[in-house]
Image (cartoon, rainbow, N blue to C red; front, top):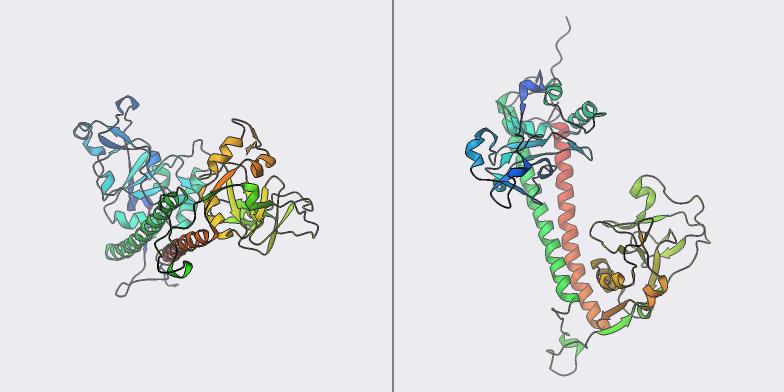
Amino acid sequence: MEKEVKKVPELRFPGVDGGWKQCRLDNLFSIFNGYAFSSDDSQESGCRWVKIADVGINIMKEKNLSYLPYNFRDKHQKFVLKATDYVVALTRPILGGKLKIAKVGQKFDGALLNQRVGKLVSENQCEYVYHFLQRSRVINIIENRIAGTDPPNLSPSEVGSLKTYVPGLPEQQKIASFLSAVDKKIEQLTRKKELLEQYKKGVMQKIFSKEIRFKPAQSEVEGDDNGQNYPDWEEKRFGDIFNRITTKNNENNQNVLTISAQLGLINQQEFFNKSVSASDVSGYYLLKKGDFAYNKSYSKGYPMGAIKRLRRYEKGVVSTLYICFAIKGDDSPEYFEEFLDFGGINRELHKIAQEGARNHGLLNMSVVEFFNDVVITTPSILEQNKISKFLRSLSKRIHSAKKKLEQTQKFKKGLLQKMFV
């Protein structure tokens, strides 16, 4: 007789043995649906009201919150959430290959659960179930089950009919405890990155409004007085600082670039996983490393469009819909890279953009006005250098925090693959 094959994960804790048992998901957990509260009961303050929009991927969101009267907690006690509960979106639950499931947390402790938001209920380990449901293989199965429904709805009964393998309770507890510790580290790194980004944004606001000024070092001034300021900032036209680039792609460069808000100028194939350019790019503008390009279309965080500097490649080409330019004199390209990405000329762009007029999503503005009418208040070269050096040091710290966060997220992804059957 053939021996029964025991299902076991690739990675296990010391001291645990035995195979995992197969069971239906509804034997592992159930989903308790919320209550259909009326929108007429909504208030400006009171008891938090958890709706689908409040459930993010692994986190609860805290924007555009809704509230119900406090006395609703007594009237609807079974729909009151605890900080240790886990909730899942039941409508449009899959986003970017991830399930919208999150721990309630202290800020939503005592909140009321709305219809189409489910609470996980398990006699075993809800923590274990939470991590189990984050696995890509499980998400793919669930996504296939909801495909075709409009709107996509996560049916507790259909999920419950799926089969899986589970360990005994002691091993569930070990897995849940370990992965929760990893989640805590991810939460700390995320918060660190966010705080650094907020700090840099606040400092940039004060620097570019001249609320914060840098002073020369001892080596930059004559005599013993190092308390003097750099020269006053001067107003300059955009065209006094930058030359427009209209060099065509006569060398048949095939590195077609697009502007990403997060990644800057990046190869289209790398960013979109496909080319969205014309078949003939000989008429595109040719950029060299260090040049700038302006995409006049709105994107998140860039209400007047994004300006990015070519960093990744020695050369590349962009559509002629972009406005391209390069530093013409001794000004610091690093300073203007920070200044322009911050949106330092947004007010000036708003002046020359025709209100309400857009062409294929692009702001309608004259290139001539862009170079002649946009005015920038500019510090001296020495102060530019000092500002850019300071801001680059903050960027390095943000990059370091982001890299550590990505490494920890990748580490967790590997654990999810190896610690479950």
